[in-house]
Length: 128
Image 1 (cartoon, rainbow, N blue to C red):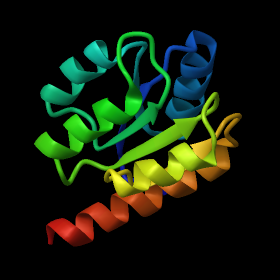
Image 2 (image 1 turned 90 degrees about the vertical axis):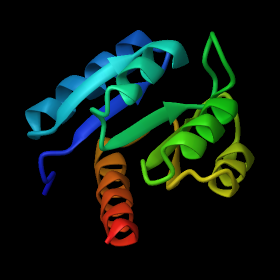
Image 3 (image 1 turned 30 degrees about the horizontal axis):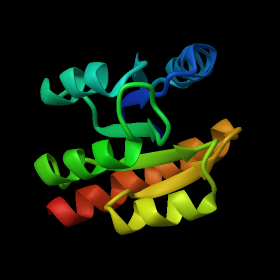
Image 4 (image 1 turned 180 degrees about the vertical axis):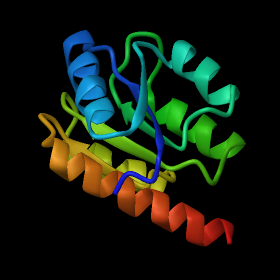
């Protein structure tokens, strides 16, 4: 169940974010994409996303630095990291920096959906 969640995908791989966005929308989610941290920050500042799915390797900024900024300003906003070029080690480091979870690329959509549901549920419990 998607609970009407707003999902922001931040990744510089255009085909990946467009395909994933379309698949999430077909499942009833509201989904938007950003190809850079700067574009993602604008959307986050608007208060729109319920969950951010963030790649760790982006052209304009290190994803881990951006994760720390997000968690510093919006501590209850769940962030799920995507690691492709990086390793599982980067995902584990991301958890230490406040990420809700991480996924290794290529990501299975079912796995991502499950991790988003868990992250959202946990953020709601923390906010209650």
